[in-house]
Image (tube, one colour):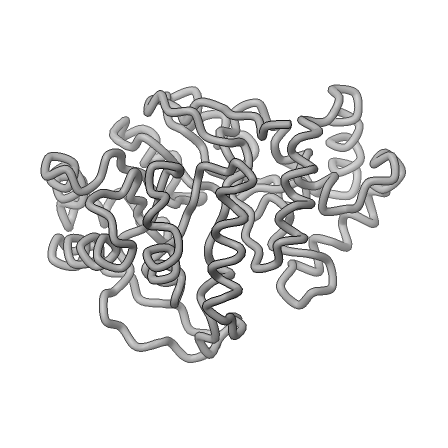
Length: 303
């Protein structure tokens, strides 16, 4: 069975409803990253493509991720839509635990970042470059960011432009009408962007959802434990028909009618196979989706 596809907004491109987020391939960055061998990275990246997934998302900020993509699957470049990010400070030292990575949206830094990504991933173009860290409209105007992104398009280095955005800045960027794609956090347990996702899609943009399984398995040290407590409080297991929590969560996410794709990261081929199997089952039945929302509303997890 093939993974279902949806159209990525005004790009007109068909992307698999399950994409791959390559953050887990970043290696030990002194923060939340874990050591990963080249063999492990090669195995999971090729498993992603072999499974039929055609959307891969990465970033300058994700340690060894871009280099691994270039090293292990650049020879399969025509099989996937490649998205990375810009604004990440090129050459910056790793921040200390608890500190945010610096993001600088000057023309010089954006151009340097895209050129670095192209070299690392051994490609002549990115299908999508996204502003990282949800910059405000004011920052974009101050730095002439849109003109910089359009110049990258003109030069053929990127095909489409987007932004990884959250509230409160997301609506202003949607209103600009220039971004082809928005990457937005969302899951059953984190529903504050449920309506803004629809608004972005209504404006013609593709929507790439991150965090669709609440940032990982419950109890693995990478998930949002408070959010997973809400899964228990809403008694979603009662309507999951025996499915694991992560499967139910992933199917809830892809049931959002305005979603183009959701990126889920893993370094484990077994987890990848489980995610593929989940999305192949398709969206939740309408009555289950409505009941899940009702139960979540009751415990305060609202849109």
